[in-house]
Length: 535
Image 1: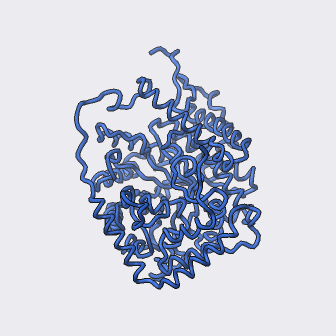
Image 2: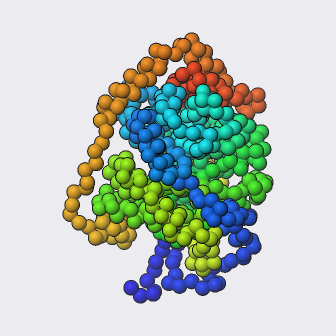
Image 3: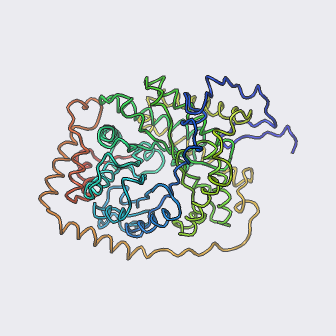
């Protein structure tokens, strides 16, 4: 191949055969600065991993709370430093395990949590005042946070001692995943209420993890991942400010969640560009302090990049992606198991994924110095190009009236759909190589993965939630749910912000008397209705 052959990054950025100082277009003070200083391109902490390694947070959720608890303890014993919970679809959608709507889905893609009793079992023996917990939950995020708080208080642990994150990012559910319940306006108001509650009562908890990851999984490019994540951020911040919250009260606890894919240099540049975009966005558009403009993010290696063919090759993909995340300055990292294209990860695969992080941390030298690729003409050029293209796309969303309006118009969905289709065409044409899939293939059956007996699991979980209902005080539950529904009538748009009754204390009260996830969701849905996407 000659030097004149055109090369582009996965986002379509032209790649030159060689880069020189002029290509970096670098104003050191304005565009980089030192690590720990605005605009945070080089990292949000001055010493980064020299002082403290990223949190190694392996994602786990296996059918029942008891089984998931065993996996948590296995990973903690193996050196994991934070918990991360995957929930099954009924839990994500506010449906109890004994509902006819849950049939066939209980425990399949994560743990089933119906009540505080399940949350107690999930967290049994875990030091909640010493370990941080991340929960990938959105439409029912406030309810799962409430149940976590009730478990802590019933163990004598104060809210102020808890640390962790709820994803709570409903806009990307409308865009890319579909686990929404309510329409956008009351959903956004509920998120603003969680911001208020956490700032006042759970100060070490991140009330949201604004996710580019799931949009990337749906087919977004790195540019779209940045632009759409920050478009959603603008919507959340504006909605919170409209309810009377000062930006510097909640902004320091905003957190983010990005994917890391296979193009090492574009991914590193993406993370660096993300910090710069965010810092300028928060200070410039919202008048936030520089301390409130630090982009703190969790990274997960790309699930969509994993192949069922020759699954051990995924170990190499995950290693490259994890290297990109750490070179890019992530605060927290999940590495996928090599067998996740086939099933929920086995214990062996999950342990090896954790060992991958540990080798990077302790053997690769990546933690020795901050932002080691700074000054690379290529990386600095990519960083600036990603920033420019992401800001141009963010401007398009602004022109549509913001993220919520763009969701209603189907803009995000159409843009991501086109990118996903284009990528698939390149793979099928052999322009993009996927090792073991469209090149270097072998004719061998995939390994056999033993799956749980989901039918038995579902019967057991349904019986468990029925038992909770039989033991509780039905009158107390009805009273708590009626109070919640009554207060929910004040939510559904910025014009209703004045005089609103806080919802989080009422959700906690309902969880405390053993109202279920489904019952709490039904109480809110009865007032707010169900979201129907544009056709």
